[in-house]
Length: 66
Image 1 (tube, rainbow, N blue to C red):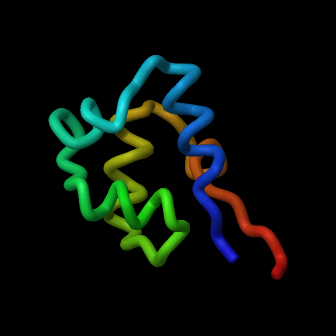
Image 2 (image 1 turned 180 degrees about the vertical axis):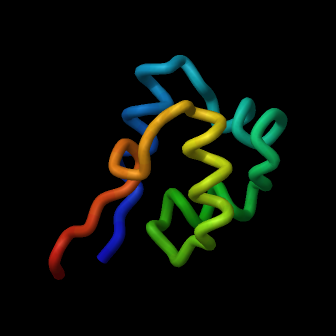
């Protein structure tokens, strides 16, 4: 299972809010809700997040065996 727990840690460390994600990164509130629920995410969304947060994929997502 892919989880996005690291996303919230990275955002906190960089002082980025979900509001800033929506306004400056082009991520809508539905996508934020899906990230919080660890639901499926398009790679283009992950790409946007990495560019906006200036980070690597492993800084926002990780695989955990179920």
